[in-house]
Image (cartoon, rainbow, N blue to C red; front, side, top):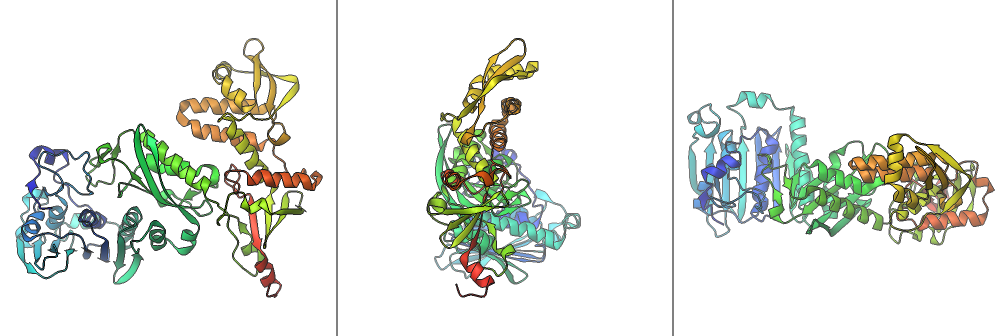
Length: 567
């Protein structure tokens, strides 16, 4: 496509004309945007130091003819947006026509490009030359050199001496390692958002990142490591969001792979890496209670939307986007992520080791159906009146009986909201519960939800209610105090945190009646078998509602290695 027009004055103002490149990572981002818009299947990035010395981005995209290459370094020259076009709905990553010009005003820029017809072009713009002056913005007028050059199809841009004439800008940068870390994180974002494109990143001559451009699993391996990749699943599904189909694709590490910060939840929209707290929160919401408390997931999720529903002009950096029906889109993302993790069998066998401390690990990944881990398993005893020992093929499974029972109870209670009745136990005599005005109002407003959970109540004068039944999942009754917890959680749901409040409530209700240490010695083989079967029927059997593992495993080979046997 030719660089056919200059954006109109109205749209120049609208899209924050005069944007100045603020740091090396912004340079890399703009050049990668251009490479992807050109249809590149390979993007190679090389950085010296913190990026102010030299940045090189090369691609195998469509390239440009000579006239277009010469005009591409002019401000507001673009082939991606008509003079009167609306930035909302643009389907390219770049569209302002500012990137190359803004970079050239703050550095020495060399562009070599060819459309693959045997005729290449070299364009040099030196914003560090004395003729450019010290001024930033449109008043600087660097000289432009255009000459023939040889190159295969594609474009290479080299940026040197960034901010050489802007000492204040250069001094405002962080240290070299911090600036390169920004670049590395950004390139990783692009690689995970565009897995069909091969990315490479070199720093001071050493390769730091490489993806083959094949699929999401290989992209995850290039950005992270083999362990993280082996403990992950991919997702590629769609969901409805306010009448619009939302595509959700990406790679999700299993809940056994976590980080202490949220930096590893990477979100993109139509292949554009973005910062969007609502979408990132939706990804975490999809993990739900599979995550241990205080831990964050590793996930890369791309959200596909019709371009007309995306406004990339929220900020000049284009890393923040506005979405129509943002809440509906976020709900769709959470639903797809949750379904993907529910459908994945999260079982994992321990690695062979010679010491049991390292060999005994949470069960997490594997293949097979969700109940396959226990279909042929046999309970063989109880250890420390809490841990159920189970023989399963070549593995010894150690099940935290309380955590397993919690998971069973939690899912039974959760199904109550979908219409499945919760087993209840009568209170004889009924319990009398005195409520505050707010609590009494909540009890009336949420009578149906309370009944679905197994709390049967009736007014008993003033703010008092008589509690006749309580939930009794798996045959053990909750206590009457759980009724107040239910009221508090349902009231919190009214403030807009319905899902979290409900999950907190169900987790608490599941915990109260669950078997505890001291209960297991009295259980017979049939009871243990029943617990194992019910756990195997759960959607998410390998974590309790609070995120702790329910099952640990150790392979027979570990015992053999520890005892010096071949098997």
